[in-house]
Image (cartoon, rainbow, N blue to C red; front, side, top):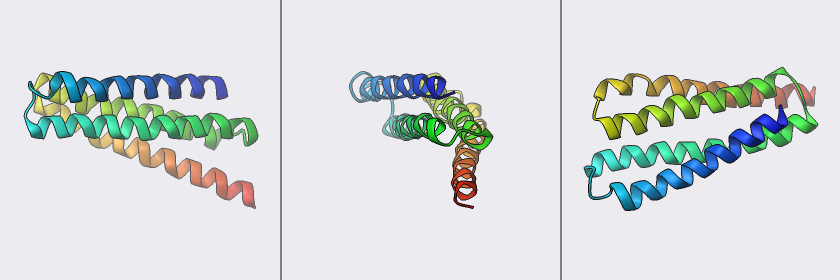
Length: 124
């Protein structure tokens, strides 16, 4: 699983930087300031969780287990749902896509919870 999480981390990091640059340079004149801020929120959370996936990849080498794997899965799913829905919402203008975003946030929370539980169990 470490390899998969490392690959997902690299992909999320690469695309997060690329999308952030695209927003700053290519979308600045095409999107309203509000939509641009929403897009940037998507890149912000994507990059944070790309680093979280990197941490999960490293942790899975030293503390393998179901909770660590779940954390990585939830982080990846959260990026897809949270950031992906924000990108689609701002680029398409379909406001109903915003209903997906909270599910991505819940996936992020579940990932952090799994990571915390894995740490807790490793100490006992």
